[in-house]
Image 1: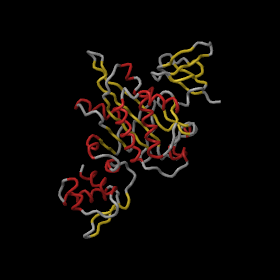
Image 2: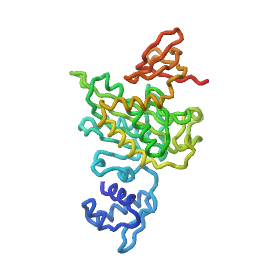
Image 3: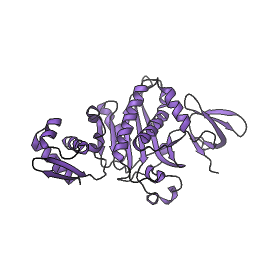
Image 4: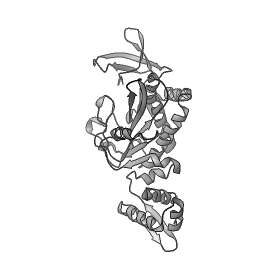
Amino acid sequence: MTKDDVLAILINSDGYISGETISSRIGVTRAAVNGAVKALKTDGCIITSVTNRGYKLESCPDKLFAGEVYSYLDEQRRSSIICVASTDSTNNMLKEMLKDSPVSGTCIIANEQTGGRGRMGRTFISPPDTGIYMSMILRPEGSFTDMSEITAWTAVAVHNAILSAYGINTDIKWVNDLFLGGKKTTGILTELSIEGEIGVVSNVIVGIGINVNQSRDSFPEELRDIATSLSAGSGTAKLNRARLAAEVIKELDRMMTLWPQGKEQYLETYRNCCLTIGKDVDVINYSTGVSRPGRALDVNPDFSLKVIFEDGHTEDVRSGEVSVRRR
């Protein structure tokens, strides 16, 4: 923790800062500060030190170090954030932690996933040093039906975070994918834990994967026409991943303070950003694999999708895969 706190202070410092000042801020010895600086240098950070002036951070590798994320957050929020270099899945890590009853808002952020998962068991490609792969545990109050809306609220929260961090305006494809320029940039996987005896949702784990700095050529050839990153899709230079990770945490925290009374503002943003409305779609049943063509008319107040099918009947779609037909 000391190393991460020192890095956060160095990032937020304008020029040199003394070891005495750092030790006073975080309540450790000067020797501990010096040890933290040495550890940060081992991690690849370039830090200069000058007698009677202190330390100055010159550069830091983009590895999503905890200290980088901390630098954008209040001190009291940092204790329940865990950053790891690599894991199979951040959702899986949080599931393993449930036996220890982690506090609501506990968040895991990985620089790489070796077994990232999306909906329907699909693989979410999660290479190192380019994307954000994170999961947070939430404990919202409400019925099982209410919980089905969390994934749509999360899509809005991540949309807001990207807009706040970079000024990039993403679209939402029903139900929870974020798109930029007609290509997918973000996937969201929500998993619920239910108390078996009473049938109440006890935990919600929200997993979020965001393509941030991948180049077009870094995607597998079969994905290059359907996936992009925020930097490639917006035509901007390399983006600061730690800043976006912190903004996502802030937006998820804000979402939980507004749940469920703030539904109208999330629904309004969702509808305004939903690229599925007004499009010809194919609605695919998860169980049977049967695909039915129709046209998406609107998003209902419960975030279900109103679709009119070719035979003229209208239906509110709450589950399954909805694919926008390419013209």
